[in-house]
Length: 306
Length: 294
Image (tube, rainbow over all chains, first blue to last red; front, side, top):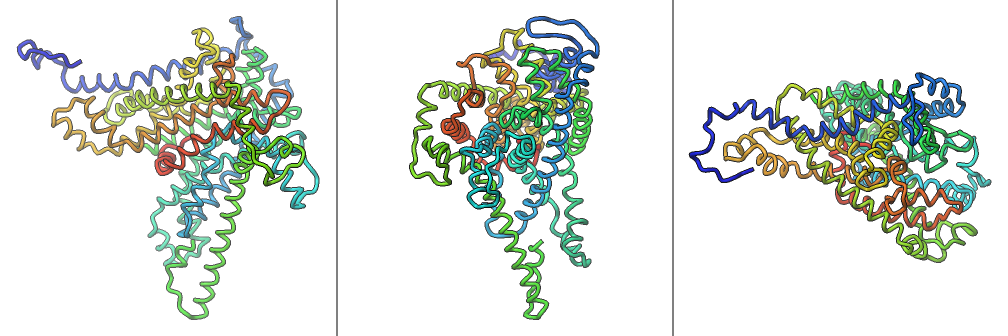
């Protein structure tokens, strides 16, 4: 780059590109690697997945175009229907709970109470744990033999019978949701806590002078102050929960008899049995709903930026 | 809410006493709720650690909250055949490489988008956000086919490539936020002092954003360290397995070895837990800025 150049041979100012253009070229050069890699590793595979979902591709063959046959097949499959419903239930229930728990704990820690820093650190722990470690641990916790939950429930007499939490239809979904809430609420907790800390204090004082009680102050000051963050967090968390694989895969692998089957696990099973076209169709079928969430989230996050 | 109550001068009137009692009850309830929440958070972690230190008979036959004998047998078992250590090593290689590549080329892109005005800037910003939110559950299928075609399947190099799909958008998005905090005047001063554009980036912008870069590096490392689905479809041979993959295959075998499994879980979460406790300040700021996937 910086070769020693004799001043006399240095190109004259006039022959160089104008600084505006040079700055632009420099800017493009800086951004190019990321843009090219994203086009190659995200955009191209994205459209490739959509294309594959319209073929009967299996591993080792290219497959031919078969129109909507994969989607027609899926719509008649009970497992696929179960996967859609379970995904919707997990997103609604677990993200609803994460919001309530995250908001509640953020409000508690936001108070000027001694020890709040320690509470905050402890409450963030599940988020610091790798997801695979968290869900493997919950798998052990739920075991009829060797599991901590049964031990505590029978030991304290809260529920005297040993339950196979992950092994029966009635409890499997609730168990998956509980584990996913445990691992996921800290993200909400920290996001909301940061938003609370950015609400100006004098707004509360003004509301107080105007005679608003605590409940009223919550609705007229706190809620508008954190609304934006809560909306973005809801969208992001819903997208991640809907596409979550680990929680179901490591706890139940979709069982028992599809009681906890979700679409990422179903797509993975499709890949395992080498029916690539069908597997892709499972994911692509969820795309319309996800696209709405993603576009909504993107426009909100871009608006934040400007 | 109690902050306000606390600021009101507490007269020794009846109203004052009532207020004071309400304040104390509020405090007490707050602490009770927080302590219960912390216990619920800690119990699974406690169970993971204690199970990893138990003898098989105390896991299966006479389960207890506090084992009579502590043992490191489980750690010995999972470490002895060497496979798990190889998996940890693979995870370290992949996570470090992904982090270094992402931080470097993402800071270029983020700097370009923050400091320069050009035609496709808005488009690039949108592309990065879309990429960030494009789910892995959709991408894992085409990526495994493409990597197989490129003969990069079943290799750590291939894994590093596909992990860039989530690390690049995340790092670029976060770094943009940090770079915005660097005052333009400082950069202009650098240019006047004879630094080149790239010199400004390396000598001024990057050092001033060091806490942000640390946070981005930790998030990227964590993302790569935790990834399971892409590794499952890409890696087929035992020698290329990462830590999550190695533990995943422990539970798909017929006997479920809870003790060694939890020992492996403890080993693979220790580095991250320590990292988070040390760097919590950066992490919280980073999370608040860019909404980072947990």
